[in-house]
Amino acid sequence: MTAPRTGQAPPPLDRDEFKLEFRKSFLDPTFDQVAAQIARIEEIAWHNYKDGHKAPLQAPAGPEFADPDYAMSVEWKATRNALLAAEKVQKDPGTRSRVLLICASARNDGSCPGEISKTWRLTVMAQEVLEAAGIDVDLLDLSLLISSYDKHIHPCKGCASTAMPLCHWPCSCYPNHGQRQTNDWMAEIYEKWVSAHGVIILSPVYWYQSPAVLKLMIDRLVCADGGNPDPTTTSGKNAEQAKEVELAGWSYPKHLAGRAYGLVVHGDVAGIEGVRRGLSDWLDWMGLIDAGVMSRLDRYIGYYASYAESHAVLDRDTAMQEEVRNVARAVAVAVGKLRQGALTPPDAGLKRPRPK
Image (cartoon, rainbow, N blue to C red; front, side, top):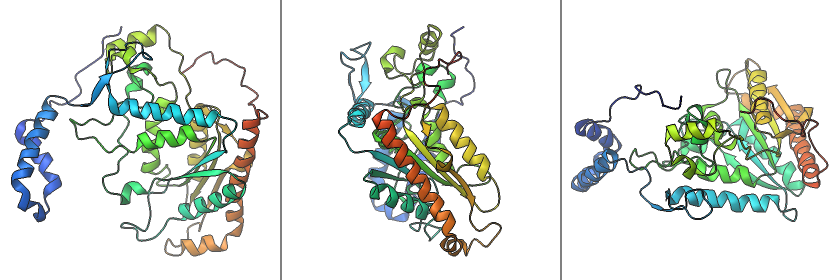
């Protein structure tokens, strides 16, 4: 029952294939002057790949884990400790309220688009309202993935579908140094989510769907909904062991539940309702609490109008601007009530007959 099914993955790269892939990052002729050094680095990288150096920096897990002697990634434990510290501050009633604003457009003026996104402008409007209400704001601009050097949100590897305990909180799939899957932004993003009392996602519609930069983050947050906070119980990524742990009974802990949320989804032709509904369903499932009907906004900006003039259209749409501010106002109120214990979902005391 617990034997993992195998046979999909291709064989590892051979030495020549590895060289071709590695050298793609050094095609600029300016690297020719250090060709010998690059060749040496390539040789080291090859051995790290071949020998599977996923987490080269390790230390014993420590007494707070089921297997204190397990060789744990130092990088993963540092992220985990940062989340614990952030959670302690977040739960302290004496701290200021904090809302995470997520600009989910992939466009900014620091790269090929050459212009800021309308989503960014809406995000700033929400920020101004929240700060005027005395709330601290964290800005997460996902467009930095397209304009910042070597910044990544690596894809989710789907560990949860093998067994939920194989999906660790926070994610332990990255960094994978042997595979050169490094500089993963999610360690910082997890801390922003944990620190927040409320979250507002502002997103455009790309081809009837959420932008890829947003979906990357969403998929990597699967570990926040049912993820395993103790990787030693699965000996790291031991799939068969994880299946046994799940079949013995798993509680599916919701690590981000109880935060308030708001949504702003905008488009120009179609898809706004579907994207807003999908984001609402996802946040509801994770245990976040919407801040009311006016906190979940979907609107068109420049319906079937020119892209070139879309910013001017937003300038004129003062009703849309005020609706965005109302989303922020609603979340501000909800956060205040949540922290006072005055806002409880009506179904909070019910137990799911089929948790997952």
